[in-house]
Image (cartoon, rainbow, N blue to C red; front, side, top):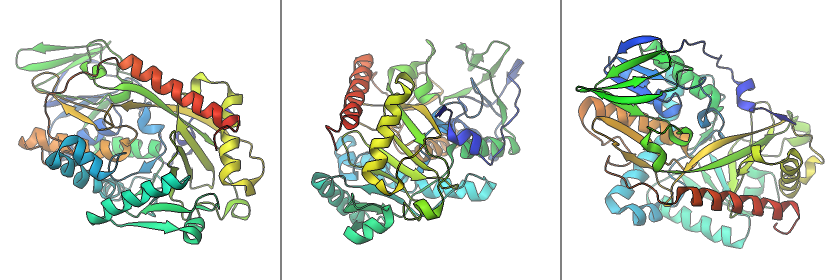
Length: 426
């Protein structure tokens, strides 16, 4: 089992050969971070004729934008009524509306720019792993249907036909959603942004940001860019001492494993319409198949810090629980990505300083949320209007005791997975 991200070596979008930032430059807008959010911002600004220059510390992509599950999800992690309760009716319903439409934004960009990311539009499946989970899905279905969302609660035989297992009796099918190869999608956004006129530089970590008159200057090892507006889109990969975003999330991880391609003779009844799926466990398991038929399993936690035998044991346990018909699977590869969590499971949009926009806290919903936030940032910069953003831009308080949150989550994930491996947890 190789330690390698599946999406990197199965991407149909070729890797981009881009130069580091060298010399002194000026722009209308500077963007730090070459993931989905930063590239969506740059693309939409460049299409409007704005001189935008983006810098990325590594390759495109090198962070979570190219390492996630590749689910094109609608909404946030928590149910829509809970969102309105946490954020207030007005803000909550703005989140529900804009992020409910987010998959359509993703698929529109894919079609418009011809991004070869193996996208599917057959929906996603939220699977109940026990009776309590079945009740939770019924609650979610009622809330979503009340808002006019095209979701369907699948029961018994219909559910089993969609998922391919008798272990699940109820699942929530969200027809707005789908799947893609996130590495290819991110590369496609970069290609489209460059074609629209954006300047994109890789291997150019920002070492400092300083005020220069009415502008902000971003300094790298070999150059700098000066602009009146700055967007910080570093999210879970924020590390630098100068970057205030690091105070507004606590770090988590998500690991995945992938099988070799499985023929339809062996696995044709497993997720036959290629929906992405996840369950209602306390520490969720994600399940999907890629365009080549691989089975991909994932869960919360840092796989890089665990022995390969532990990851393999967990994967075997989940596979045998849901899909015993496969027999023994020789797992092909495993990889881990970072997640920016917030205590209330909602994102944060704020200005760390005048003329700087920042975002964090996608809580595992980065493909869709990052896409619409980038479009919304561009619209806000152009028109001073935040109506396309999921939330208004407002001051945010730093998260207190973030290291303790991180430690508690990771310890809980590890204990839960150990219980699964020891068959103490179903």
